[in-house]
Length: 359
Length: 179
Image (cartoon, rainbow over all chains, first blue to last red; front, side, top):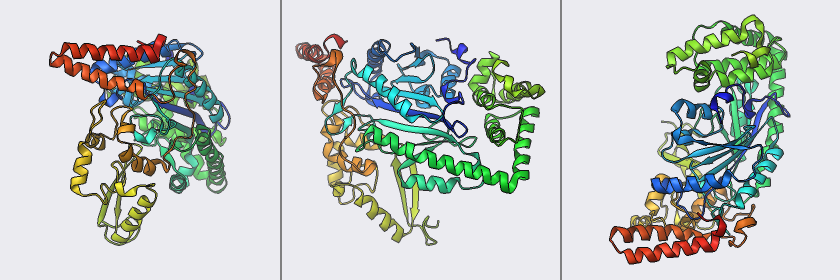
């Protein structure tokens, strides 16, 4: 797989289509699996890791995951390329920063990624745009079944699929949806919502999973427990709460338009103005402003930008993407200047809609 | 520092590890007691054995008992319970068997359940003969370790026996899927 080719697209999670895609960015399921005859990764020697990597790579590349699987040796990549895969959510930060033999298999549509030697020997991930947990579950179950025909997953009749951390044991499943909740943030209701989610055993994380800060009002909601419920029950547990959150966010957006239209219009317009004129800008500020503009477009307050253009910018203004697009390694200061230039070029003539071809 | 639940002075400072995330609690005596009771009540069938990762460590256990428990190590991968408690990561699949008694209250605390009810391996294709539980395959981890140790002390005959035993297990259970 030529990583450079990927810069031309945005990847599945930001495609911006699918049901409820004004609020639900993407639906994701991951499964944690280990091979029975090897120690878990944190206990594995360098030689063990190399053997695990070879054992799994040989088998997953021949397993039927559909749409052709490309295998990438993550250990052999430059740092900017590892970061690039993290920004596209094809690998975790943990895999990028790990040591020793490790890799990832990615399907052509960037829906399926198979990480080898992350916290567990194998982490299978499947992502669809918009709200489609049932579709994601069906696809990942088929991938998992295909691999299980040739890989002896560590399994115990009582404990289920055995994982390096007891927090994942049993089903090894993490079901999550990524939501864009700017109106709940602006109306200061977001903390209340999260507190009630914690009470029903759901976790809230930022854009890049465990331990990451919520950036640009994007939040991931996922199940906390993996044992004692079936996979379908856990998919349902997360799926059931999403319509409620969508409804809260919609109501908050309506409230903002009804009660504080001038103020919201002002905030959105200022965000748009900064993005079009700034001379230097950080990734965090860009994300925050794009989030506001995204909401403005959805509320009909900005007319000449489309949502898919915003999604393109969300990923292409991130550090590794920016450097790969420019074909140069840039330090933070230069990146901020380059990012501002990229945004200005992008919005030039008010044509946000032409984003895809504007490199 | 004030209690997170009321205006009294916080005298209990608790660090919880949940799904890899660290959560700090600062509570007054009353709220700490309520909190600890609540997490023990949710701690499954054997809250008195404490556990490790979550909840008040070693409640109801003497330091000696904890020390003995900590030194217990897995015959396959060699990890001690102490190492697991420090890292929060297990060493191999057999740990779930070897440390079952210690892990059970911990798992009950995390998941509110102590039994898997989800999908099970269907064992089709080249692994059709493999039993549902994979304990026998996991014993290869112990054999490999023993083989390395034998080589290190130049006990080549013993090392060869271990190697043959590993091959036999791979042949038997992995067949064409073996390495």
